[in-house]
Length: 169
Image (cartoon, rainbow, N blue to C red; front, side, top):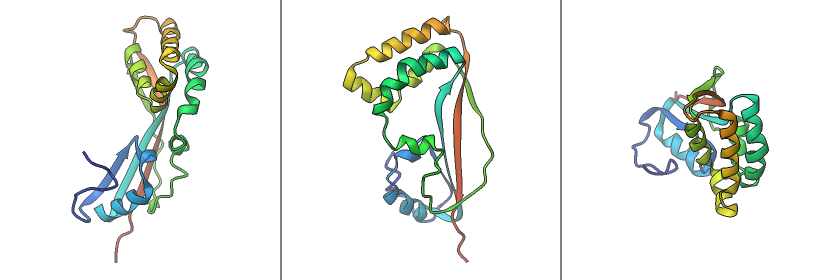
């Protein structure tokens, strides 16, 4: 794997290029020219991402009370691009109309907590404050969740961006 901003592929070889859960991390000054080099005329660029889990009011409240306020200062400002559904990303291609997607998955408690543990803000916060806030959140979620093996529907706001490179005449 290499950087999306600098690849070894030949010019104009792809009909479709996709970025999943990472568009907000890319260096656009380098990425857009590289993408333009790689996409064939008329090619499609698609990006998607998902935002914060929603379960039920009681579990959502636990995260709102114990986790989100603590990690808020540790989010990169670039995450806002995803949270705004990439509306603020200046894509050099024509934006295409896309359907609205629903994203849900069934997870048990361990799967949910493992996912939350991967968040960059959680990791940065742990480096700064230790893991006490995360341990407290896990304990509060466990009390509300019930059995660790219980599977619950997790819904996440899903954003999808599709664009098309102009065809050459």
